[in-house]
Image (tube, rainbow, N blue to C red; front, side, top):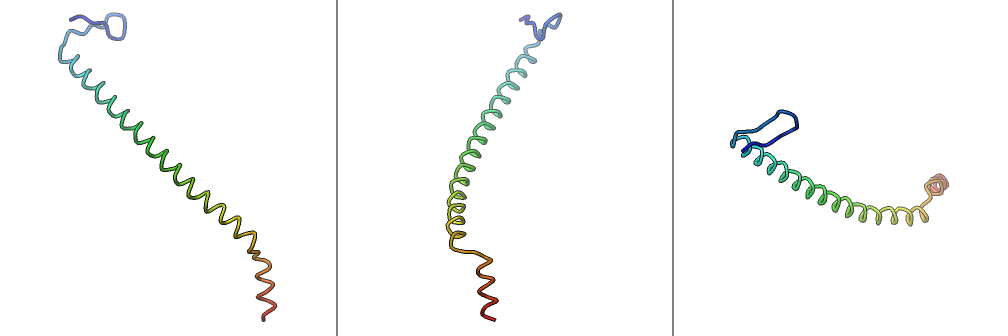
Length: 80
């Protein structure tokens, strides 16, 4: 069971090493899959947040067209 790893004179004869390497590769692959799924979920959540906050932004724009803080202050001073 000779196998070159990393080039030149590196030879692996140990079945234990090959087994541990395969397990490590499997674990890394599972972690990467989990990370990708988490990033996808995060992206979806941010997309939903952006959608809901864009409605708030639109509402704020509409409200600002009716509400002028300077005018309200003038009206308050006029009532005094």
